[in-house]
Length: 239
Ligand code: IPE
Ligand code: IPE
Ligand code: MG
Image 1 (spheres, rainbow, N blue to C red):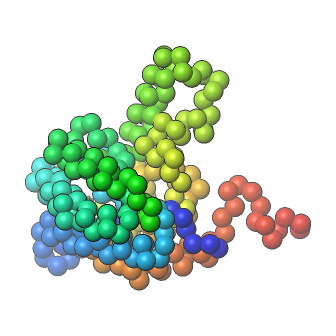
Image 2 (cartoon, rainbow, N blue to C red):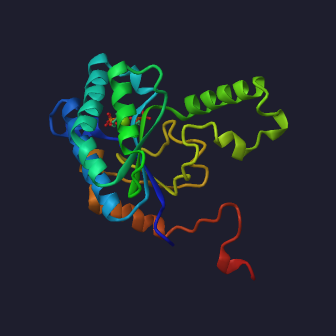
């Protein structure tokens, strides 16, 4: 099967990676950023046009204050340190999730990353930050209700296609492949609408140990899958 157009990754296992080494969880998150860097480069080299990474979920606010603050700090560091290189490499950065309730310095950095890179065409890097699929779908429903109240849409015009236009991922292709590291086998509120027909690949390694080779391995597993989208496999049609 052709290689995936869109890979989405649930970067999980930073805490356990650190624990296994007797390090604080923050060290795991720092190592996780390195793995993210390498993965973005590798996906670019492999000519994967879309990469989405789950960086902070709408439920991650329930973690201890200090850890939340470490994660916010790392996002800022990542953008400050890597934005120039991403831009040089023609990467367009997009952000999904609820940006309204984020601290203003983070909001500004995310806006800056998007606006600086908006005309780049080599690759799309989508950062899911303060993202939760249920929250995204509820916000989409709210926008749709507003469009209806303004008389721009009738109830009869609501279809999967018209609804999708209100999601944060409007105009993005659905992920072909969703990878989750750390051995957990769940979506944890990630892209619930968009992953309806995605191939799921769960890998035992912790996120900081993910690299170019692991990405290639996940793509290899994806290639062996038979995607049917509710239909019948092409080779079986005449049988
Ligand atoms: C993923 O690693 C990073 C985020 C959720 C931000 P975790 O911090 O969830 O690590 P584990 O799952 O506790 O090992
Ligand atoms: C999912 O991981 C969120 C991110 C990777 C950002 P979690 O570690 O938050 O998910 P659960 O709690 O194990 O389901
Ligand atoms: Mg986790």
